[in-house]
Image (cartoon, rainbow, N blue to C red):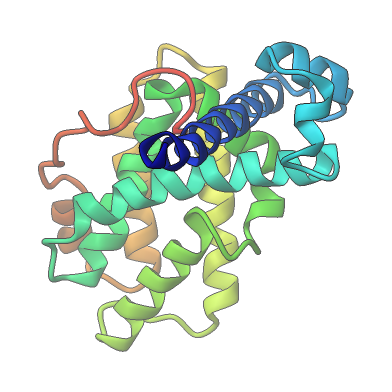
Length: 220
């Protein structure tokens, strides 16, 4: 009986985790489709769970959508952290993260659309890509690599550049996403005070393998 008793909570927790993951995944897909006003019934149907299960995890649609966005971008941000952990130059960390995120728009279109549909609201989030970008800009400024007078304005420029780049890549499917991402990264580095030659060199450094970033769907 002891083994049976111990296994029951584990099965229950796994079932709850699967239900929550299904709800989050459904919400991410709806957000990517621009259906931020989808009723809870539509969400639960897309997740293939019962209506009662929804309220076991979230109090409102808004709470679910907020969690869906933050978790997707937080996971992508964690991947960026891993791929940049061996870099010593904070300017290169910033550039590599920006370049990899630029490639996200074609590699992971669902997460890209979630980002584009919620991007400006996410700029002030404490999770996801925004706090990581602020961290990298601050680190580069402290190291004397970036000349940043106002970090908040710098973040506004980076946010606008990232979102407009993503939208352009969706609007122009024939445009080379890698070259476009690298060029915008170079322009940002120059704006932050790096010499033109160095900005070009850093923005064209070989990138790590992206195999750990999901090809399709969300980052959940």
